[in-house]
Length: 110
Image 1 (cartoon, rainbow, N blue to C red):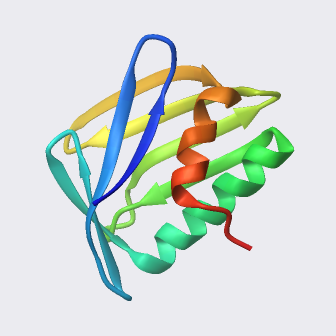
Image 2: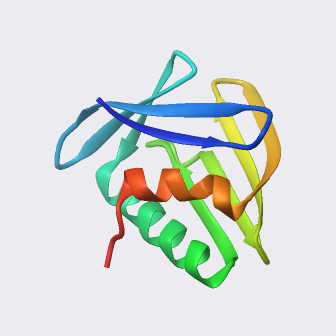
């Protein structure tokens, strides 16, 4: 299993890739599994890498239905995080240093 952690000094949220193929990635978010197209996961990784390095921008991961399940918005080192699990939404703010482990888990995509 591949785990991505996003958090701040108060909380940490884990997104676990439980299964992957060339077409689909299954991600467990707090016990709720979402199917994501592999191409959309790669687009998310690229957007996250770019926003992280520019300190500006948005990276959004969408499920197969096209709904955003993870959104990270960077603005001068501050990161607003939105995670959707089923019908519930969790939002919090962190700084770029707390996103570094998530970027390391995803890996740099060129």
